[in-house]
Image (cartoon, rainbow, N blue to C red; front, side, top):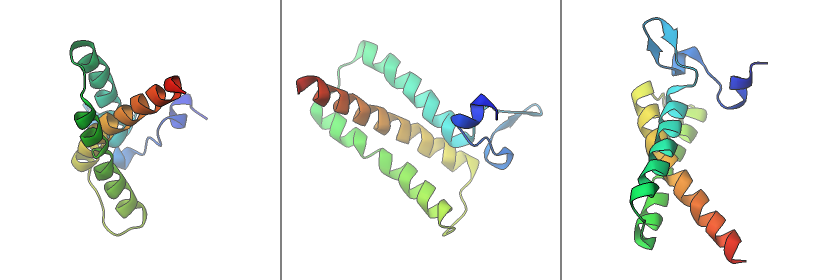
Length: 107
């Protein structure tokens, strides 16, 4: 088993192909990882208010809706949509993770 398979399914039909080479992760994970790095850089320059954090958690819902409707074969997604929901979902997940860690520290 390849170590990359532990972080993404790497299906060729759900991955971007550039000049004949498949990205190491699928379109959704590409968006997710880009947004996580962008979020960390963003936090170096800006502080998020509680309202923005709560609104940011709503960013998780598009990735959930896209993933579950595709999983239950209610519709077929495409790589552009997967990438977009990965971007928004990554921000939402990291905001939720940050809030969870702050909660743990306060205990």
